Image 1 (tube, rainbow, N blue to C red):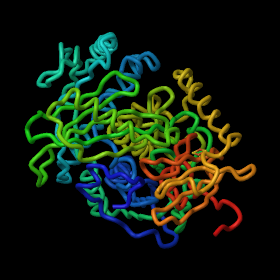
Image 2: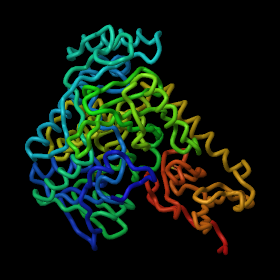
Image 3: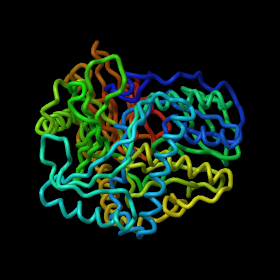
Length: 506
Ligand code: FES
């Protein structure tokens, strides 16, 4: 499968989503969905079930984006209910709880209805303190979940583990699955329902409710932009979400040595754990542990983050054997801790967005697909106000200001010298920035020594991209765009490739 990164996740290594040819000229449908991850495919599926005709366009191939690079937990909001209640009241936190529970139930019912073999299972999830002083967070979350009537039990420690986790909250009836197998099942169902999917078809713009792609125009009555971060909205939403990279390690454990569970701690960034015991032709399970998040594009040599996760895991799980997988993925963090899902504030037409899914992408994106489907078919939905993309970030003003200052600081790169003074200093397989007069040039040296020179200016809003040695990509530190070594877009919001560096070189 095509992917947007150099590393391979457990999920993309063990399942495949069918590929589709590109759009071939103009077409039309009731709804055009942009993006072939869980948000886009679920939206397409639900809209088809409502009798709408649907065209879905994907810049790479379905499943090649961030869904296959998650750990596919269905868990409570990582922002925590008591924080949501502080900003949106108990009523807002109750709506979020309702959306998460109904989203998880919808996935379960789609798995059953469509007979998707994706290792879906219900299981308990545990919130544990990252440090002894964090037990206050456990108490506050417990008090809030009691007010909300959630099925949560406070325990002295997580049962069945070798390490003493300290006081834990057990969230009953959470879920996990294999995300790529699930997407493959959704794709099959969409085909059966008459939906049309086009791969290798990058959307360039939205005009009214029409989507302009590089392969033709899709005329529609409504558009769902489900591309992790919207490509069609240069200013408004990009100031309200911040791109973060998260790292994951998969370690072999003897089959049955651990019972399936979900676990996440109170750290910031936090560690998150699940067990993959899929019925695969292999005699062992895989312990999947993530964490060590940082702003996308703001660390060039992040390999040590995988080492930190491995050390954290080995200190707590003596069952862990060798490392089988290392990968990373990008998440969009909303300024006030709640996703942006609904009518796009920058468009007058029927344009809908799903973004800001934070560390709970499976749940948020499924809830987002339910919400935009209701809006498109004209049905009332109780979550519209909570997730309104047009809301001001006043409730997360401190975080909003911090992220804006961080973005502004990235533009000072243009005042700095290059990272190296000559291409000779770039090792094979790596890249670096070189200053040429007023310009910064992104230079990559292939393993065979061939050099590629590109403008370092991100086409979105002009920040200088940085080389990522782990994923072998040029990453933008402002809003999270990513580009391959040839400058092609791997991840928006940029919808155009890196430009040429200037005069032709050898
Ligand atoms: Fe906005 Fe690069 S993603 S400037």
